[in-house]
Length: 192
Image (tube, rainbow, N blue to C red; front, top):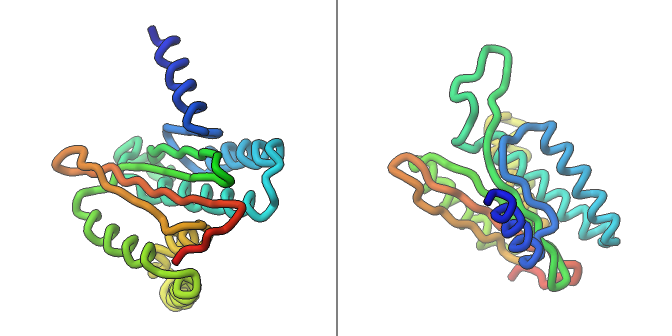
């Protein structure tokens, strides 16, 4: 039966325009490997250089977010001198003149209100405001290297053709499943 289930998953992904999908443990080596595959796929599809750079940039930011912040990790306490593996899922779809990069991972319930507030502020800004916020965050990061939190989300929003979308699905008493979606179009209907 596993063969049928996997084939059905493949069929659903292709029907929905998904050109790349990964679900599993993540680290910098996985990011690099999938990134190379994504670059090749976009070259084969002859995506324009501008859209390819934006899709790749959003992909990298999404992956780095999961590598750093996913609440699902293995092992829970990594041996000294090693890094844990984080878990997440990322999908890149193509259609209607553009691409969609969507990622998801577990977050702790206690982190949801602040994360939601931060993402709502980013989502509701236009490109000019996003650029100003981005520059402010970078300057703050130079003064205090720990204060760069959220620069990746701002960068995703800056590269997106429409406002970012996000959601939180309650998993249990401790965790929510967080998703972030960015649409990148070759013909830019710019954010409001």
